[in-house]
Length: 418
Ligand code: FAD
Ligand code: PYC
Image (cartoon, rainbow, N blue to C red):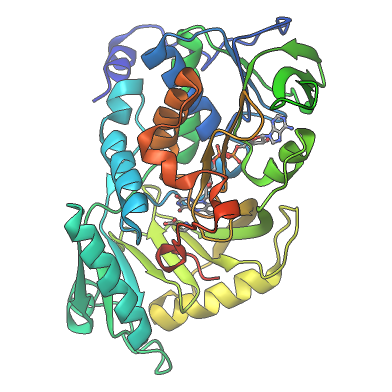
C-alpha cells in the first residue's frame, strides 16, 4: 500500500494536496524546455531532474496535463513486439512499470492481466509464431496457443465469431497489463514538480527561434509561447498528434501522418473478463477496468484528419464485432466514446532522438502504441537530452532512418486494425 494512502487514512485532517505548483510567471530562460504535458513530456522532466540532476526545466502544455492521448488511451501495456529493437525497448518499459506506483507513492492501478492476440487466418498465425519466437529469444514471455486453449481460457467467447472468422489460435503474452492513465501523468508531474521542474498549463508554443548562418547546422535559440519568449539551448518536443506542426516550426519535413483513433466504454459490469483480448482482423480489442467498464477500441479512422471528433459509425461497427466475439453482451449499454489524434509513422515504430536541428530533440510517432512506452521514453529521452547523445535503446528509432530506408517494421505487432 502506498505510504501516502496509509498516512491519509490515519490522519485526522484530510487536506487535498495539489499535484503540482501553479506558477504565475515564466522565467526568461531555462536549461531545457519540454513541449507537451502528456505522459512522455512529464516523464522526461521527472527523470531529467531525478536521474541527471537537471532541474532548470519547464514543461509547457497548451491545455491541461494528461489531456492529450495520455488521458484518451485504452492503457494496454505489453512487450510482445516483432522486431528485436522493439521487444527490448518495450520490455524495459514493462520492467519500469512494475515499480512506478512505489516510486510515485501513488496507486496507478497497474494490473497484470495476460494479453491474447487472436489469429483468424493462417497468415496471422504465422505472424504470431514469428513474434513468439523473437519474444522468447529475448526472454519475453509469449507463446502461441491453439483455439482449444483460447476457448478454455475464455469459455464465454464464441470461438467461431458468428461462423465467419473462426479463431485458429492466439499469441498469449502473460505480462500484458493495464493501468490508470491520468494517474501516470499526475505521478510524473508531481514527482517532477517536487524536484524543481516548472509545469505551465494553458501555455502554447507558437514558434521556435533558430540561429546559424546557413553554413552550419541550425540550432535552437528560443521558444515563443502564448505567454512570452523563453531562451533555451535544448527543446524536447513531445506533442504526439501535433508533431507535424512543431516540426514545421523548425523547418523539418515530417514523415508523420495523423489519423483519429476512437475508443469507447460500456456501462460497469460485474467482473467477467480478466485478460486483455485483441483481434486486429476483427477490428476489436477489449479489457475490463477496475470499475467494471469494458474499455474497447477497434482501428484507426481510415483517413487523415487532425481532429478528435467521435462518430456513430465507430460505435456501430465495434459493437457488432464485440457481439460476434461475446454474444451475451448484446444488451450492454455504451456509456461514452472519444477520440485522440494518432501520430502514425510509415513503419509503426516511434521517432526518437536527435534531429538535424541542434538542441531540438524528438519524442514522437507514438501513434496507437505509446502509452506503454511512457516510462522507458522518459528514461531514454532524458538521457538523450542530458548527454546530447541518443540512448542505446532508441538508436533504431532515429528520424534519419527514413532517409536511409532503414525502417523498423512493427506493423505486425500493432494491436489496432489498420
Ligand atoms: P500526449 O498525451 O498527446 O501529450 C502531448 C501534449 O502536447 C498534449 O497534451 C497537447 O495538448 C500538447 N501540445 C500539443 N501542441 C502543443 C503546443 N504547441 N504547445 C504546448 N503543448 C502542446 N498506447 C498504448 O500503448 N496502449 C494503448 O492501449 C493505447 N490505446 C490508445 C487508444 C486511443 C483511443 C488513442 C488515441 C491512443 C492510444 N494509445 C495507446 C497511444 C497513446 O495514447 C499515445 O501514444 C501516448 O499517450 C502519447 O503520449 P504523449 O505524452 O506523447 O502525448
Ligand atoms: O498498443 O497495445 C497497444 C494498443 C492497444 C490498443 C491501442 N493500442
